[in-house]
Image (tube, rainbow, N blue to C red; front, side, top):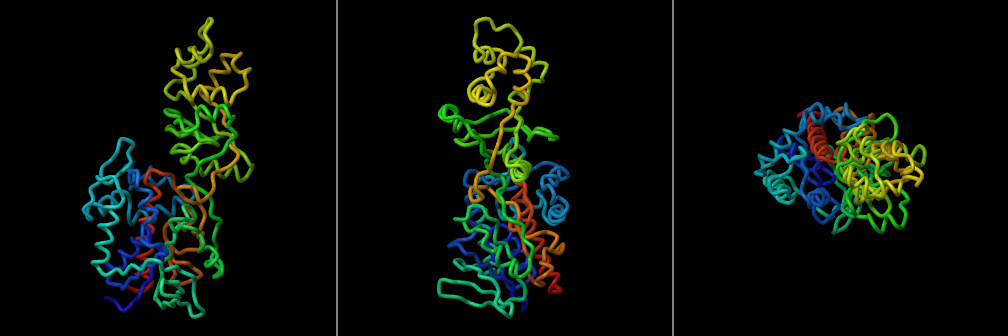
Length: 405
C-alpha cells in the first residue's frame, strides 16, 4: 500500500466506485457512511428491478443530461454504459437488455451486485466505517466525524465527497452537507426535486374514479416548442407521476418555478394521426353518448375518457372538430411539484464550474466531489445511475493525478 491515506465520504455507487479506483492503485482507502450500512438508496432503487444502465447508442445516451451534457460526457469517457455492464460481469453479475432498452442484472435485484462488490472491495483492502457522520473540517483541515464511540478527527491526504443529493433523506441523502461546503466558499445551487410527480387540481369525482390508474400508450410534452415523448404515467390523487412525467421533470420544474404553473399537453392516441381521429370523431353518432361513440370508434375509454371530461369544458363536445384536436393535444394544467424528499433524485448541488475536470473543488485543493451531490440531473432509465458510477471513477482518478500517482 501507498503511504497516502484517502477518505471517501458516502458509500453509494459514486463513493464506492471512487474507492475501488483508488484501492486498485494501491492507496489506503477508508469509506465513511452515516447509515448503519452502505448503499441503502441503491438497494431501495433496485428493489423492483435494478435498472443499471441503458443500451441505446452512445450518442443518444449522452443527450440525456441536459445542460450538463458536456461535463457528464467527459465522465462517460471513463465509464460508459457498456463499460458498466462489463464491470458488472467482472463481479459475476450478468446483465440483460429489456424490451425498453433498459439494462438489468440477470437476477434483477441490487443486493447480489452490492454484496459481491463489497466483498471484492474489502478483499482488496478498502475499510468501510458505518454510522460515521461527516461534520466538516477542523481548523487544520482535518475531517471531523461523529462516530458511535464519539467524535474523531481524521487527517487525510485527499477526500472524495459522495454524499448524495437531497431526496430520500431517510436513506442518508439529506443535503445537510450544503452548509459545510458553503462555509468553505464552495458554490452550491439549491437542491430541487428531479424525476418527481407534479400537482394539479383534480375534481373529487375524478380522484375517486381514476386515482391509481395508469395512462398507457400516450405521448406528452410541456406546452411550447417541445417534441412529445411516448410512454406512460400514473394518475395520483393530486396529479401525475411515473416515467413519462419524470422524463419532462426538468422542463416542467423550470416553468413552475418561473411562472407558478405550466400546461402539459397529452396526446391520448399517438398511434393515430389527427386526420384519422378527426374522421372517426366526426362520424354520425346517432343516439349514442360521446363515451360510447369514442369507445366504439377510437377505443377511447376508462381513464383516458375520464381525463377528457375532467380537463375540458362541456362545450367542447358540441364541436367534433375541436374535440378531435384536443384528443391529440389535451391541456393539463400543473401548478407544483411533489416535495424534494419524495423525488427519485435531485437537481442542484455543487456547481460544476467550480470544479476541475477531475472533479476537484477549485477552492479546496485535495477535496473531490462525485455523484448526485453535483449540479446535474438525468431521467430514469439507467442514465442517472451510470453517470453516478462514472463520476466516482473520475474523482478517484483525479485524486491519483493530484497525488502524482
